[in-house]
Image (cartoon, rainbow, N blue to C red; front, side, top):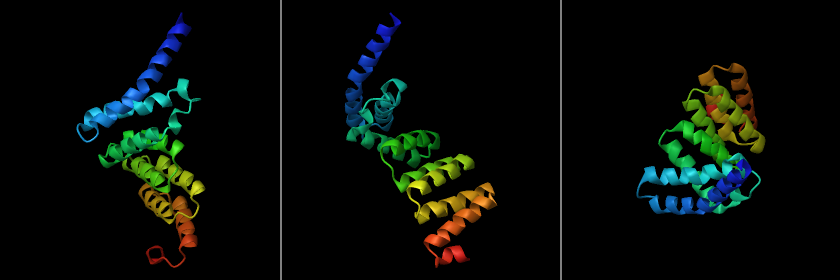
Length: 168
């Protein structure tokens, strides 16, 4: 039956999942292409809808691998892939620098609206993060969005009232 096939496939994915980590670990530092194939599969499986209710993403190895893929993708300027894995990473490990890298990835693809939304998301979690405000200023300038630019500038000045770079 279709339902049995679905459960069999799900069971096979659960069985192969730890093996994918071993494959990624084996190829790390040896072959970046093979490392990424194993690592991406390892990260993509827990993000399938059928595994949303599991605790797979709480595994420290998951967090380590998703961070490595996100960083590797960003550093190699594969911003589309970086966005995907930075979003996955932010779901399990919040960090102001990850909001910076995510916003920068959107900015590099010319997706200014998404970049500004990312800055705003980061500022909700880290309301006094000066660097996120600076990123917002830069992206607002690139987007020619004077209203957003003023709001980030005002916020940055509240955080660092005597910052000479802002007073010029």
